[in-house]
Length: 566
Image 1 (spheres, rainbow, N blue to C red):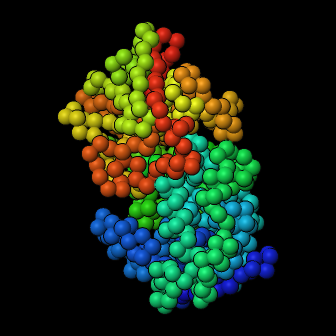
Image 2 (image 1 turned 90 degrees about the vertical axis):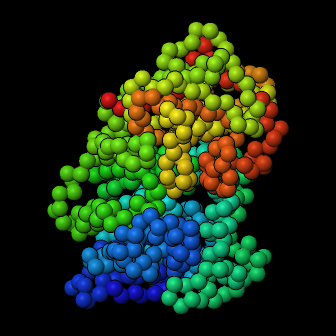
Image 3 (image 1 turned 120 degrees about the horizontal axis):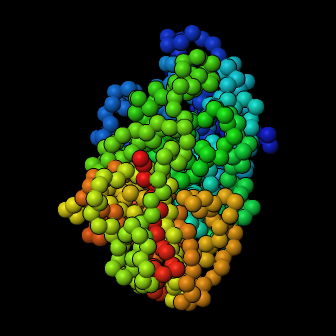
């Protein structure tokens, strides 16, 4: 392939961003005009995966050698397509350093309207280049998927198709504040490690250019004070805005404006950041030509697997090249159901989400004996737990028949706190007959639970029009503090999950006032990965410590709602 490196891309305000353009070589393809796949982001278009995230590179080599057989991986950059597997098939791949990052000078302002405007301009620039056929597609993971919703809603004239691979559209509910609680663990790690290391002009970065070995942040060297003055205070902005409002809304896509063809790929292994908003993004867009696939495993690795690259290419061949390849026969919705051994039990092909025939099964909490039962207990009871502790777990008896779940999950709870607020952390787990937990390899955790959910109880207000039995929709626009001891009813959204469990297995719901950590585990990944909610500025102990109480029976029918498949 031909690489045009650090090409100048003009912006509407006179700024210049830098891009790498990977084009088909004459040997591989007849010279001409090709469709373009684009990414724009702050991680460094010239930083190899092995340097940006060494642990991911080592795991990729260990778990998926077939990826390394399909490419030399020389230009494998975190969360973006590998140009080596695209240019031989007649595609141009364009990767742009966002403003203020890598080789692109300017003020660093990620996830912002300013960045979205830049991406709009970059798309329109690429569309009129001599190597472009005028059709632009978007392809990428996580950051490079989440931004696609925003760009597509801006409707650049030459944007023809999008393929967000596990990237939420909702900046408040998923990207930054799950259930209204600041996702501080990930945000601090991401901001400092993924973004600031690559800020343009950072002289202390360890990141170097794949080709030259030079410092990746450009020739300029700025002082710490200059660097700080040349960027938005991302974490400070989030801490200053605990409630949803215009600032968050302008960073969340207006989905009804999106009408281009879309292949949306979600992954069960994306708890705490992307899974929920990827699926809801699919549901919300106005595109007539849209498809949803929900996969298992790590969404980063699955993106690169040859079979999935072929799937991506078939979609873009149809909508960027106009090839009549039968893509429309793909099932509108395709969901992998995870087996207890972390394989795929089966793949469900359907036309809707939630899946056809889903039975909304209720398992009621019985606080008197900490169980999950099929019928609501008549006798009122309650159970206390320290907010900052291992919490309380409610178990089913061993299943008398196999149980297969795939879809949205909810807990209806009646709760109180000894303080004026409470954060609910819910973890859905499964266990085999011997008591060993069923876990799943994911991008978040090597041993992830079935699913997790979060809710700040003072932000329990629901949008009645948007909420359904299985999908509560919290407005997060006001905080209704608790009176200590006051019993309130809440709908706690547990993110979608799937599991195929044999008879004899059991389910368990753990409720805590802090992030789940698996007892006996050590190291940074012990149940919730880096996706922790532990910033004391967002969770002052006076409000979020104390004792929590869960109520059941009588008129207080606390229950777990599960999506049972026929």
